[in-house]
Length: 254
Image (cartoon, rainbow, N blue to C red; front, side):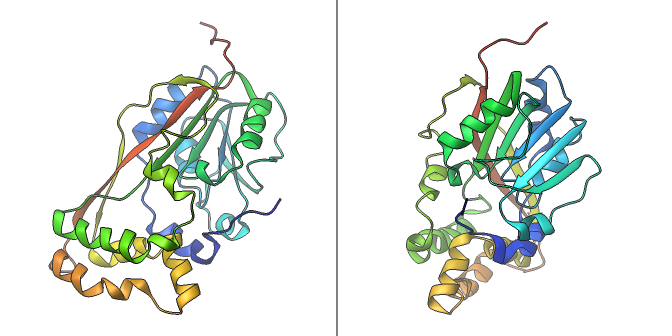
């Protein structure tokens, strides 16, 4: 199955500059299942979620359709990386306790993916999918980042991006819903690290490809003015949003 590949060009930068999810998130989703034998991290990218998920499960299968992303994935003794589409994974049926999708559910053919989740999920298994949008740093910096995000790059975002802007609230999700507490990713970055992260945006890559210029140059000066000393570390925060559901309605034993 072909897929819309928005990230292979920047796989190495993705590994270097994408923020890590809070460990408390993985502890929480792991607490929702009785068994911790196996988990499937789907659309794993460079394995950011998979390696932290492995702290709670004996085995994690991490899949992504991009061979470039998988080639740059973070190593872990408990994580096995496979190049595979979400809609046709090589896992056996009735096998996993938890399925996670970090910042990727909006890319999937969800009807086919959900069928795979039901097939591979054990009784009592859980699907947890989350996303994040724009970070907050400081008002002056945030205004410049917004100028890049919408006025400059708005037409270069894939249409699926709207599902993130809607915080997955409007996404089809045919499972018994469970609560998702408030979690946020945080990082302390220099200006160079922020620019490295912005360069991983799929819209930046598309702008470069179609126009032959770098859109980051359009905000380089204003962003430097707003930031202050470029080596100064600033707190960057991304609130997480998403959906969690019991795959099969049968309650856990206990």
